[in-house]
Image (cartoon, rainbow, N blue to C red):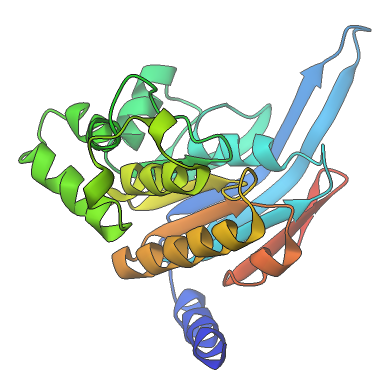
Length: 242
């Protein structure tokens, strides 16, 4: 635990001198029209700067807008107002295909539901992000190495239905990190796992994040998990606090 605190303190000093955030948002606002022709305000005046290699947790009550914020930061959705920059690129002027191209090979995702392809083996699931990038070489070798990092090289030929929940999330981690992304977005990554398995997955997640110097942005309802991140933001009434 002392090593983790020392790491957080050291990172804080580095971040204070950083001038190029990997994720930047200013005045971010999201509202949706309701069936009664009124506007539902979900997020309001969100301002964030997230540095390369930083681990960030976003917590809040159910329905507070955590997942909505994650989607906006990742460019899966666009805000009603305000600015989001991902990897130095403003997202609002881009169309959906352009945002997807920006994420390709640079952004990974881990979800509460593992989102594995049921008809593909563990190895084939991990290979998917590399096959989408035509410049990728030695795809099979890289995917096998990613499975080895999560301890599943011997399960590479198994389908998701032949794997436990924890093993499926390990495959999802391998898939997320196989392209060595600059940014990883995680939405309740242990939500479908028991406590012991969830602890194993989180330990592995932080190990891989630190090894690759990946920026981690994680949504979680677990405050104890959030405190393991270098920065912890809370969403309250659509606004963010530290």
